[in-house]
Length: 318
Ligand SMILES: [Zn+2]
Image (cartoon, helix red, strand yellow):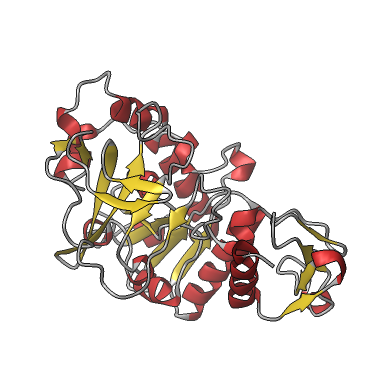
Protein backbone atom coordinates (compact mmCIF):
# COMPACT_ATOMS: atom_id res chain seq x y z
CA UNK A 1 0.00 0.00 0.00
CA UNK A 2 1.47 3.37 -0.94
CA UNK A 3 1.39 6.58 1.05
CA UNK A 4 -1.65 8.01 -0.76
CA UNK A 5 -3.66 4.86 -0.09
CA UNK A 6 -2.69 4.79 3.58
CA UNK A 7 -3.69 8.43 3.96
CA UNK A 8 -6.97 7.85 2.14
CA UNK A 9 -7.80 4.99 4.49
CA UNK A 10 -6.86 7.07 7.55
CA UNK A 11 -9.14 9.86 6.29
CA UNK A 12 -12.00 7.44 5.65
CA UNK A 13 -11.59 6.09 9.17
CA UNK A 14 -11.64 9.60 10.59
CA UNK A 15 -14.83 10.49 8.71
CA UNK A 16 -16.81 7.26 8.66
CA UNK A 17 -15.41 5.11 11.49
CA UNK A 18 -14.35 1.56 10.85
CA UNK A 19 -12.74 0.71 7.47
CA UNK A 20 -12.92 -3.00 6.63
CA UNK A 21 -10.43 -4.61 4.29
CA UNK A 22 -11.89 -6.51 1.34
CA UNK A 23 -10.55 -8.53 -1.58
CA UNK A 24 -8.37 -7.17 -4.41
CA UNK A 25 -7.39 -4.01 -2.59
CA UNK A 26 -10.93 -2.74 -1.97
CA UNK A 27 -12.03 -1.50 1.43
CA UNK A 28 -15.56 -1.17 2.80
CA UNK A 29 -17.13 1.56 4.91
CA UNK A 30 -20.50 2.05 6.60
CA UNK A 31 -22.28 3.85 3.76
CA UNK A 32 -23.21 7.41 4.82
CA UNK A 33 -25.99 7.66 2.23
CA UNK A 34 -27.64 4.33 3.16
CA UNK A 35 -30.57 4.15 5.54
CA UNK A 36 -29.37 3.66 9.15
CA UNK A 37 -30.45 0.00 9.15
CA UNK A 38 -28.34 -0.73 6.04
CA UNK A 39 -25.34 1.33 7.06
CA UNK A 40 -23.93 -1.35 9.34
CA UNK A 41 -23.77 -3.76 6.42
CA UNK A 42 -20.68 -1.90 5.15
CA UNK A 43 -21.72 -2.15 1.52
CA UNK A 44 -19.94 0.95 0.20
CA UNK A 45 -16.78 -0.34 -1.47
CA UNK A 46 -13.94 2.15 -1.97
CA UNK A 47 -10.68 1.93 -3.91
CA UNK A 48 -8.14 3.69 -1.70
CA UNK A 49 -5.93 4.52 -4.71
CA UNK A 50 -8.48 6.25 -6.96
CA UNK A 51 -11.33 6.75 -4.45
CA UNK A 52 -13.64 5.18 -7.02
CA UNK A 53 -16.51 3.86 -4.93
CA UNK A 54 -19.88 2.21 -5.11
CA UNK A 55 -22.59 1.28 -2.63
CA UNK A 56 -24.32 -1.99 -3.50
CA UNK A 57 -27.40 -1.10 -1.43
CA UNK A 58 -28.32 2.54 -2.05
CA UNK A 59 -26.18 3.00 -5.21
CA UNK A 60 -25.93 6.73 -4.46
CA UNK A 61 -22.85 8.21 -6.20
CA UNK A 62 -20.31 9.92 -3.92
CA UNK A 63 -17.58 12.27 -5.16
CA UNK A 64 -14.06 11.98 -3.79
CA UNK A 65 -14.54 15.28 -1.89
CA UNK A 66 -17.52 13.83 -0.13
CA UNK A 67 -15.54 10.77 0.86
CA UNK A 68 -12.28 12.26 2.02
CA UNK A 69 -13.02 16.00 2.20
CA UNK A 70 -11.80 18.86 0.01
CA UNK A 71 -8.71 19.11 2.18
CA UNK A 72 -7.46 15.68 1.13
CA UNK A 73 -4.55 15.95 -1.26
CA UNK A 74 -3.26 13.18 -3.47
CA UNK A 75 0.13 13.83 -4.97
CA UNK A 76 -1.01 12.50 -8.33
CA UNK A 77 -4.16 14.61 -8.44
CA UNK A 78 -3.60 17.90 -6.65
CA UNK A 79 -6.08 20.06 -8.58
CA UNK A 80 -9.23 21.56 -7.11
CA UNK A 81 -8.60 21.10 -3.44
CA UNK A 82 -7.98 23.01 -0.27
CA UNK A 83 -5.06 22.14 1.95
CA UNK A 84 -5.92 22.09 5.62
CA UNK A 85 -2.94 22.90 7.80
CA UNK A 86 -2.44 21.53 11.32
CA UNK A 87 -4.31 23.25 14.15
CA UNK A 88 -1.37 25.19 15.62
CA UNK A 89 -1.36 28.83 14.54
CA UNK A 90 0.96 29.30 11.60
CA UNK A 91 3.18 32.40 11.97
CA UNK A 92 1.86 33.73 8.64
CA UNK A 93 -1.81 32.99 9.25
CA UNK A 94 -2.63 36.47 10.52
CA UNK A 95 -0.56 38.54 8.09
CA UNK A 96 -1.76 39.10 4.54
CA UNK A 97 0.56 37.01 2.35
CA UNK A 98 2.59 39.19 -0.01
CA UNK A 99 4.75 42.29 -0.23
CA UNK A 100 2.20 44.39 -2.14
CA UNK A 101 -1.56 44.25 -2.70
CA UNK A 102 -4.06 45.93 -4.99
CA UNK A 103 -7.52 46.62 -3.55
CA UNK A 104 -9.97 44.65 -5.67
CA UNK A 105 -11.85 47.82 -6.65
CA UNK A 106 -8.68 49.35 -8.10
CA UNK A 107 -8.08 46.56 -10.61
CA UNK A 108 -8.84 47.50 -14.22
CA UNK A 109 -12.15 46.11 -15.58
CA UNK A 110 -10.35 43.72 -17.97
CA UNK A 111 -8.22 42.23 -15.16
CA UNK A 112 -8.51 38.43 -14.93
CA UNK A 113 -9.41 38.60 -11.24
CA UNK A 114 -12.27 40.99 -12.03
CA UNK A 115 -13.47 38.73 -14.85
CA UNK A 116 -13.26 35.81 -12.47
CA UNK A 117 -15.60 37.58 -10.04
CA UNK A 118 -17.93 38.77 -12.80
CA UNK A 119 -18.32 35.21 -14.06
CA UNK A 120 -20.01 34.42 -10.73
CA UNK A 121 -22.22 37.55 -10.87
CA UNK A 122 -20.03 39.41 -8.40
CA UNK A 123 -19.96 43.05 -9.52
CA UNK A 124 -19.79 45.20 -6.38
CA UNK A 125 -16.04 45.64 -6.20
CA UNK A 126 -16.14 48.75 -3.97
CA UNK A 127 -18.08 46.80 -1.38
CA UNK A 128 -15.75 43.79 -1.64
CA UNK A 129 -12.82 45.99 -0.68
CA UNK A 130 -14.55 48.33 1.79
CA UNK A 131 -16.61 45.73 3.67
CA UNK A 132 -14.50 42.58 3.22
CA UNK A 133 -10.97 43.91 2.57
CA UNK A 134 -10.47 41.75 -0.53
CA UNK A 135 -7.22 42.43 -2.37
CA UNK A 136 -5.19 40.99 -5.24
CA UNK A 137 -1.53 40.02 -4.83
CA UNK A 138 0.40 40.93 -8.03
CA UNK A 139 2.69 38.37 -9.70
CA UNK A 140 5.90 39.97 -8.37
CA UNK A 141 4.69 40.29 -4.77
CA UNK A 142 3.85 36.73 -3.80
CA UNK A 143 4.99 34.65 -0.86
CA UNK A 144 5.74 30.97 -1.52
CA UNK A 145 4.26 28.50 0.96
CA UNK A 146 4.96 25.17 -0.62
CA UNK A 147 7.05 23.80 -3.46
CA UNK A 148 5.22 20.55 -4.29
CA UNK A 149 2.52 21.33 -5.23
CA UNK A 150 3.75 24.87 -5.78
CA UNK A 151 1.72 27.32 -3.72
CA UNK A 152 2.34 31.05 -3.81
CA UNK A 153 0.14 34.04 -3.07
CA UNK A 154 1.17 35.59 -6.41
CA UNK A 155 -1.72 36.38 -8.75
CA UNK A 156 -4.31 35.40 -6.20
CA UNK A 157 -7.31 37.09 -4.67
CA UNK A 158 -6.97 37.25 -0.91
CA UNK A 159 -10.00 37.15 1.35
CA UNK A 160 -9.14 38.29 4.88
CA UNK A 161 -11.09 36.47 7.60
CA UNK A 162 -12.17 38.81 10.36
CA UNK A 163 -13.75 37.50 13.50
CA UNK A 164 -14.92 39.58 16.48
CA UNK A 165 -12.94 42.62 15.36
CA UNK A 166 -9.70 40.79 14.63
CA UNK A 167 -8.15 39.41 11.46
CA UNK A 168 -7.75 35.74 12.34
CA UNK A 169 -6.66 34.47 8.95
CA UNK A 170 -7.09 34.67 5.21
CA UNK A 171 -8.03 32.47 2.34
CA UNK A 172 -6.53 32.92 -1.10
CA UNK A 173 -7.96 31.86 -4.45
CA UNK A 174 -6.04 31.23 -7.66
CA UNK A 175 -7.21 33.03 -10.80
CA UNK A 176 -7.76 31.07 -14.02
CA UNK A 177 -5.84 32.49 -16.99
CA UNK A 178 -2.87 33.71 -14.94
CA UNK A 179 0.52 31.99 -15.10
CA UNK A 180 0.28 30.70 -11.53
CA UNK A 181 -3.44 30.01 -11.70
CA UNK A 182 -3.10 27.79 -14.77
CA UNK A 183 -0.34 25.56 -13.43
CA UNK A 184 -1.44 21.92 -13.69
CA UNK A 185 -0.71 21.44 -9.98
CA UNK A 186 -2.54 24.58 -8.86
CA UNK A 187 -4.21 24.40 -5.46
CA UNK A 188 -7.20 26.67 -5.91
CA UNK A 189 -7.86 27.64 -2.32
CA UNK A 190 -5.25 27.91 0.38
CA UNK A 191 -5.30 29.03 4.00
CA UNK A 192 -3.25 28.59 7.16
CA UNK A 193 -5.71 29.30 9.97
CA UNK A 194 -8.08 26.94 11.73
CA UNK A 195 -11.12 27.50 9.54
CA UNK A 196 -13.41 25.29 11.62
CA UNK A 197 -13.49 27.74 14.52
CA UNK A 198 -14.82 30.81 12.67
CA UNK A 199 -17.22 31.89 9.94
CA UNK A 200 -16.26 34.17 7.05
CA UNK A 201 -18.09 37.54 7.26
CA UNK A 202 -19.25 36.86 10.84
CA UNK A 203 -18.79 40.47 12.00
CA UNK A 204 -20.81 42.04 9.17
CA UNK A 205 -23.55 39.42 9.34
CA UNK A 206 -23.98 39.97 13.09
CA UNK A 207 -25.74 43.25 12.26
CA UNK A 208 -28.71 41.24 10.96
CA UNK A 209 -31.37 39.09 12.60
CA UNK A 210 -31.10 36.45 9.90
CA UNK A 211 -27.90 34.73 8.78
CA UNK A 212 -27.38 32.70 5.62
CA UNK A 213 -24.79 29.90 5.68
CA UNK A 214 -23.04 29.10 2.39
CA UNK A 215 -19.99 26.96 1.68
CA UNK A 216 -17.38 29.30 0.25
CA UNK A 217 -16.14 32.86 0.59
CA UNK A 218 -17.17 33.94 -2.92
CA UNK A 219 -20.67 32.66 -2.34
CA UNK A 220 -20.88 34.66 0.88
CA UNK A 221 -20.28 37.90 -1.05
CA UNK A 222 -23.74 37.62 -2.58
CA UNK A 223 -25.58 38.80 0.56
CA UNK A 224 -24.47 41.13 3.36
CA UNK A 225 -25.78 38.69 5.98
CA UNK A 226 -24.18 35.57 4.45
CA UNK A 227 -21.39 33.70 6.22
CA UNK A 228 -19.21 30.90 4.85
CA UNK A 229 -17.97 27.78 6.63
CA UNK A 230 -15.13 27.23 4.08
CA UNK A 231 -16.43 24.00 2.53
CA UNK A 232 -18.71 21.19 3.54
CA UNK A 233 -16.90 20.11 6.69
CA UNK A 234 -19.06 22.19 9.03
CA UNK A 235 -17.79 21.90 12.58
CA UNK A 236 -19.74 21.83 15.82
CA UNK A 237 -18.10 25.15 16.75
CA UNK A 238 -19.49 26.69 13.56
CA UNK A 239 -22.97 25.37 14.35
CA UNK A 240 -22.67 26.94 17.81
CA UNK A 241 -21.73 30.25 16.19
CA UNK A 242 -24.75 30.04 13.87
CA UNK A 243 -26.97 29.51 16.91
CA UNK A 244 -26.14 33.10 17.96
CA UNK A 245 -28.65 34.29 15.33
CA UNK A 246 -32.39 33.88 15.91
CA UNK A 247 -33.03 33.06 12.22
CA UNK A 248 -30.73 30.82 10.21
CA UNK A 249 -30.93 29.87 6.53
CA UNK A 250 -28.63 27.01 5.55
CA UNK A 251 -27.85 27.14 1.83
CA UNK A 252 -25.10 24.70 0.94
CA UNK A 253 -24.59 23.41 -2.62
CA UNK A 254 -27.33 21.29 -4.13
CA UNK A 255 -25.46 17.93 -4.24
CA UNK A 256 -27.06 15.22 -2.11
CA UNK A 257 -24.27 15.00 0.43
CA UNK A 258 -24.19 18.78 1.01
CA UNK A 259 -27.96 18.76 1.39
CA UNK A 260 -27.78 15.95 3.94
CA UNK A 261 -25.27 18.03 5.91
CA UNK A 262 -27.55 21.08 5.56
CA UNK A 263 -30.51 19.15 6.97
CA UNK A 264 -28.39 18.03 9.90
CA UNK A 265 -27.30 21.60 10.67
CA UNK A 266 -30.89 22.81 10.43
CA UNK A 267 -32.02 20.13 12.88
CA UNK A 268 -29.26 20.96 15.37
CA UNK A 269 -30.18 24.63 15.23
CA UNK A 270 -33.86 23.87 15.74
CA UNK A 271 -32.85 21.75 18.72
CA UNK A 272 -31.21 24.90 20.14
CA UNK A 273 -34.60 26.59 19.77
CA UNK A 274 -33.69 28.65 16.69
CA UNK A 275 -35.76 29.22 13.58
CA UNK A 276 -33.83 27.45 10.84
CA UNK A 277 -34.45 26.26 7.30
CA UNK A 278 -32.35 24.30 4.84
CA UNK A 279 -32.60 25.48 1.24
CA UNK A 280 -31.83 23.27 -1.74
CA UNK A 281 -31.20 25.44 -4.82
CA UNK A 282 -31.36 22.36 -7.08
CA UNK A 283 -35.12 22.51 -7.72
CA UNK A 284 -34.67 26.15 -8.77
CA UNK A 285 -32.14 25.03 -11.37
CA UNK A 286 -28.99 26.21 -9.58
CA UNK A 287 -26.18 23.95 -8.36
CA UNK A 288 -24.98 26.59 -5.87
CA UNK A 289 -25.17 30.34 -5.13
CA UNK A 290 -22.26 30.86 -7.57
CA UNK A 291 -24.61 30.56 -10.54
CA UNK A 292 -27.08 33.13 -9.17
CA UNK A 293 -27.25 36.89 -8.97
CA UNK A 294 -27.71 38.40 -5.50
CA UNK A 295 -31.33 39.21 -6.40
CA UNK A 296 -32.11 35.67 -7.50
CA UNK A 297 -30.56 34.28 -4.34
CA UNK A 298 -32.44 36.64 -1.99
CA UNK A 299 -35.68 35.93 -3.83
CA UNK A 300 -35.33 32.15 -3.43
CA UNK A 301 -34.26 32.38 0.21
CA UNK A 302 -37.11 34.76 1.07
CA UNK A 303 -39.65 32.48 -0.60
CA UNK A 304 -38.36 29.44 1.20
CA UNK A 305 -38.36 31.22 4.54
CA UNK A 306 -41.88 32.53 4.00
CA UNK A 307 -43.19 29.06 3.17
CA UNK A 308 -42.03 27.76 6.58
CA UNK A 309 -42.21 30.68 8.99
CA UNK A 310 -44.27 33.34 7.19
CA UNK A 311 -43.00 36.93 7.07
CA UNK A 312 -43.67 37.99 10.68
CA UNK A 313 -40.42 36.44 11.83
CA UNK A 314 -38.48 38.82 9.59
CA UNK A 315 -40.11 42.09 10.75
CA UNK A 316 -37.25 43.13 12.99
CA UNK A 317 -34.84 42.88 10.04
CA UNK A 318 -33.04 46.11 9.20
ZN1 LIG B 1 -25.38 3.08 0.54
